[in-house]
Amino acid sequence: MIQMLVADRSETMRLGVCTLFARQARDTVVREATSRSDLISKLQSEQYHIILVDPVLAAGSEETFLRQIRAVAPRAHVLVYTELDELHFGMRAIRCGVKGYVMKSRPADELLEAASRVSLGKVHMSERLAEEVALHMWEGKDELPHESLSDREFLVFAMLVCGRSVSRIAAVLNLSIKTISTHKARAMVKLRCKSLSDMIQYSIANNLTDVCRDRCTDR
View (tube, rainbow, N blue to C red):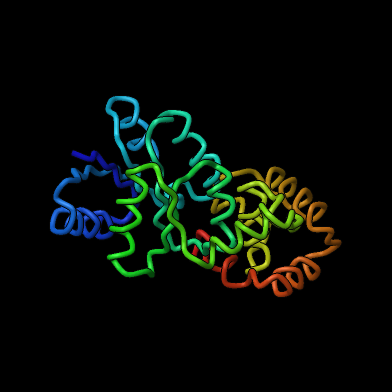
């Protein structure tokens, strides 16, 4: 039997995934994790073949979270199931060692297929994401400035261009204004922006408006 652990902050989503696999993939036993700490605790006490996870469970530190999962359970195959845009976050996730990436907007059959492939150690991603990976790997595509931002720097950048003030971001993320200002300054340097207006223009020019809106944690 294939042991799978599904980690998502939405109870409805976890129930849906469990029901889907119970009906369509009877060789798979699905267990649930409700939080980041719950997931890590379960991985430390039991072994799983597949970890189906939405990285937003660790909002603001998604890449760090995925690397933590790989470190705690190096033999398990990680399958990302999320609303995070694949062209923005997919490459980041792959660099963290995940085996598959499926958007939640895709049909249920695709999730089943992805889990089946990942359980065999194979890779699953959409044609759209595969083309992006190919461009990076085979043509030596240069990394875009925003791709060099850390999880926290990108989150601060996203919230700033969505109209949040430094003090508001600090309150939402439970961090000091000084810390947020530091993340803002580092992001501006990496993006080569001199002002908030430049950051907004950068987000528009690189089609990041919707991505930034989705990343705001106080919607």
